[in-house]
Image (cartoon, rainbow, N blue to C red; front, side, top):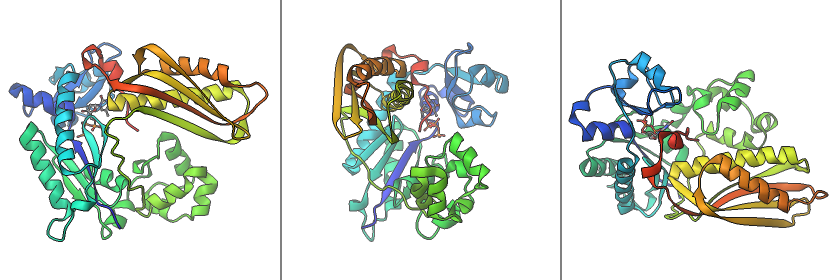
Amino acid sequence: MEKRIIHVDMDAFYAQIEQRDNPRLKDKPVIVGGKSSSRGVVATASYEARKFGVHSAMPMSRAHQLCPDGYYVTPRFNRYRDVSNTIMEIFRSYTDYVQPVSLDEAYLDITHLVRRDMPASRIASFIKRDVLEATGLTCSAGVSYNRFLAKMASGMNKPDGLTIIHHGNVHDILMPLPIGDFPGVGKVTEERMKERGIHTGEDLYSHSERDLINWFGKRGPKLYHYARGIGDDTVQSERIRKSIGKETTFEVDKNDDEEILAVIRKLAQQVSTKMNQYGLVGDTVTVKIKEFDFRSLTKQLKLPETIAEADEIYNISYHLYTELKSVERPIRLIGVTVGNLKEKNFENMTIYDFIQRKE
Ligand code: TTP
């Protein structure tokens, strides 16, 4: 049966909270971020500030140039965490299938709640109402039959939007879409697409699955499906995650330490990004390898304190890898996992710990 998924995303999350808590900031260009030193970057900007061209991840010094009369605020992560807990509780009062993506964003599977007289869009409007009543904050919701379309929909009418993508409008929405707006198309893939003359959803749509596999490998089928509005519709409702891990299977077995370590570095970065998105830290690191003949080996280290940074995860993984890997035996898979997770104590956090672009 076709699913009904809602993606909820708070509008200019940190900035909206600051405006709510301090009425002087209402309707003003508010920029939440580090100090205007060279390292400071913008975490988020209120919609008023975005009119000046200020946006997330921009250096604060640049923001000051664009918006000299803006109201600059340092982030208060504990405050944001509290609001996050409140909205997640609201979501869970509707359905057990809630998958948080970050502090201010989640997917909800509400398939079982839909009735003829209770369409998914109405449920989404109730959720928006509850969030507003409980927190005084607006969010945007997207409703569709899979996750990527729901997410696309939530971004379409921000702020305070409610957008539905259904079979009747999906084609018209996807065809003109810039290729970089499709999931999984980062800067590098976008460039490779453009070299092939693929600039929009329509260009993507015009190619066969075989072509896309030839050009983009394993991602080919996914891209082919995205252009047709087909995507993953599972909402993972792990309430408490025990571990966060990433692994890579090589197309050809590998035995070169340098190459494998480069992959480990990437995996450590991905794990760290995920942990930061969920606001988690952990104190065990596990490295798994699968040798060419499918023999699986793992090694784990329990640390005296928790970590979440990519470099730390990498350094420990490096040691575990060198202990596991036999010189003579090429491997087909490598994985890095951080376990025994806890919520990060936002008191001790600096903005630099948190600024990480989302996937
Ligand atoms: P987003 O939901 O990506 O964006 P947003 O809340 O700024 O605004 P909107 O969705 O309406 O466009 O991010 C949620 C929060 O995460 C954001 O308020 C601040 C934080 N964040 C960072 O710290 N660094 C970043 O680079 C991004 C994108 C977000």
